[in-house]
Amino acid sequence: AMHPMRSEHIRAAVKRARGNRKEIVNKIEESLTHCLAREGLEGEVLGREKHIYGIYQKMRGKRRAFNEIMDVYGFRIIVDKVDTCYRVLGAVHNLYKPLPGRFKDYIAIPKANGYQSLHTTLFGMHGVPIEIQIRTREMEEMANNGIAAHWLYKSNEEDQPKGTHARARQWVKGVLEMQQRAGNSLEFIESVKIDLFPDEVYVFTPKGRIMELPKGSTAVDFAYAVHTDVGNTCIACRINRRLAPLSEPLQSGATVEIVSAPGARPNPAWLNFVVTGKARTHIRHALKLQRRSESISLGERLLNKVLGGFDSHIDKLSPERVQAVLAEYRQSALEDLLEDIGLGNRMAYVVARRLLSESGEELPSPEGPLAIRGTEGLVLSYAKCCTPIPGDPIVGHLSAGKGMVVHLDTCRNIGEVRHNPEKCIQLSWAKDVVGEFNVELRIELEHQRGLIALLAGSVNAADGNIEKISMDERDGRISVVQLVVSVHDRVHLARVIKKLRAIKGVVHISRVRA
Image 1 (cartoon, rainbow, N blue to C red):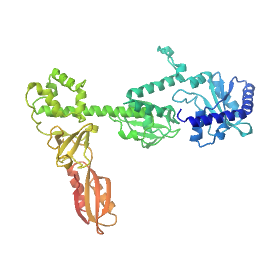
Image 2 (image 1 turned 45 degrees about the vertical axis):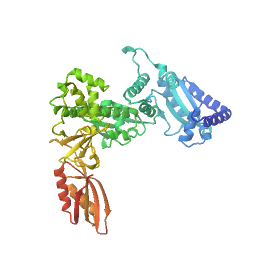
Image 3 (image 1 turned 90 degrees about the vertical axis):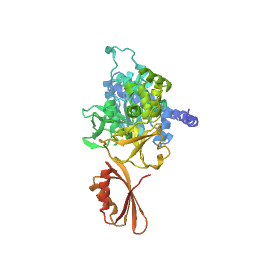
């Protein structure tokens, strides 16, 4: 449908080639049937037609000419039970020489969608390559008709699906879970496309259980394949008993162990390297929930701050008034309204006025700044234009959809809205601020050898960390270095600057602000 001309060309070429192949196909078929009879094995040998899309994929993916692909003859041997599959494999390997590295056992390790079969490639008569699939009748039905061929509608425990059926049901259950967790239909399609036709790698859990994953999967994909909670709380991994980065692609045969911590949360950066749809969907879902809970928490603090200026609180408001305001804003629950406030889509000042307007009194401006701890997460960010750090006088700019952006009180970028209570709110740093904050310094110093090493040594001596460094020559003698350093607060910054001033030849150090 997508490439009608290519399809027609290949179909015509297959038709032409079929006539020349009949004699060879019949001879190989007779040879295989005779081999099974000699070994006392019952099985049906079928010459397998290659699907034109399969031919097209091999021509493109493996860069092969049409003749090379059509010269490979495909056969399928259908037997009565699993034990016979392996006995037939031994018989055909005795008849023709197998190609090294081309044997795949999908019976012991089925594909994620429940497909099972033994695949092997042999050197047939006159050196002709033969691809053989060996499977039971039940596996044949599953391969041809899919999960629907064996779907069980009974729900009592005695008739619970086993083996292939259980894997098939598990796969469909995973697809349904992806659909429920996906934000929209495009996200769902993207996830399912990844999982439908993967090239697999097989890895082991520490207890020896085999896990099948798409090629290129990482330890995070593995963690989510084991269980959603393992993925969400994953903090590190061991591959073959050595500590490895979470982003390292897994190789077949590796043993993977996940290190998790109860309070850990998914990292948004994981979305850059995960491969499986399940991992991607669950990371996005967890981040949405995290963002929602943080938005509600910040929204509640912002609203209570404004209500506090009027000697009120969310808990003191009458349920009737809250419901009336929710209906006015077309929100179903108070949490939804608080989330909107936290994300900056609605202003706490305006919402507070609506909640208190029945009293007919005017709402004063809130007294005192709102304290921030630096751990508010996804709904609070720090402006890159002025890089505020604990100890600086700060103000919060409410940006629709982004939550609150913290700026320096004197930042020029918010000059126009600085005194608008619907856009900005006065902030202060809490006593228990945690984390590291980036600050940009401009250093003018005399050019000398080993300059970068000197600067790095001084910053390190003050327990600072260099995030970014760039250097320009102002003239032949003076160099200008732009340095981004991570510090804990203004006192820590002062310590870093003091160490930098001690370097011989430093002319001037200034903090870069908007």
